[in-house]
Image (cartoon, rainbow, N blue to C red):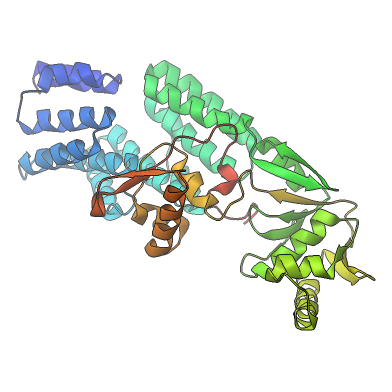
Length: 406
């Protein structure tokens, strides 16, 4: 490797893409193409970066498997940055194996963290944790150590383990500053804001207030009966009753919890559960059936008793009943939460992350665009959607994730 290639590589490692381009911008040999591709990715031109990296990979000969593997890892990183989550994961795994076989532990670890980051984006927490456990972070360079701690913090925040998340972010900050890479330092600071900003709302006894993640964690550990509108469940300590697939029951449970300790009239319950303007006898009969189903579903946690006007929730052990609500409640809140990272997403990537059909996601995006909340650019398969980060609150509890304790 000649001196210009070496200098360009060092500039990229230090987060200086312009410095790298000054050295290799006019060269067409495979190593220069690869470095130009990485530089363009750091500057945000992902399409140009992909094209350069593919040209570089094709330019390396059959005996240069190590160089081709590095190009594959770089292309995977560009795909992740551009939220192309459907990028072939097998190609990245094969490249990681090649790097390990050739003794390139640094780039192999980087490939591993790209796999973990993709798993986090689509909500596969258990798989992400298992992948993190396979690496020894103590032997990594500062930049990779910071990436490792960011992944640890990401898992911990989604698990509502705020002490672990805060400790991991502190380690990530130290490592990022040691690496002296401004973009990495900014990423750590951005992740840290999620611990300081409101992440949910607490509704109890007719009042409402914002909660940060640490307060949400404390609430989950309390003895209160929680109707969780973030994960669509009823919970008390370690007992969790999921109502995610029973939306009518959840709506009834939430209405009863918001009114607790008072009761809720039958007319009001009919309106929220069935969206009926008038509670006639047929709707009242349906209400009795659904209340009976709710009573059976949450029988470990509470009873639903009839009153003269309607129904009231009566917890069996808890002395307090609260509703944990999302910071933003609207029909397309989950899509907005993913778009709030400021990156550009394709509808196929959003569909993968949300475990929804692409057509469903497209309808949501069109509704959000019509309301002026997001914007798109490009056409056809190249179309991307994005929105500025949402100010004022964190979106952790809007992201796809398993129920805490699963």
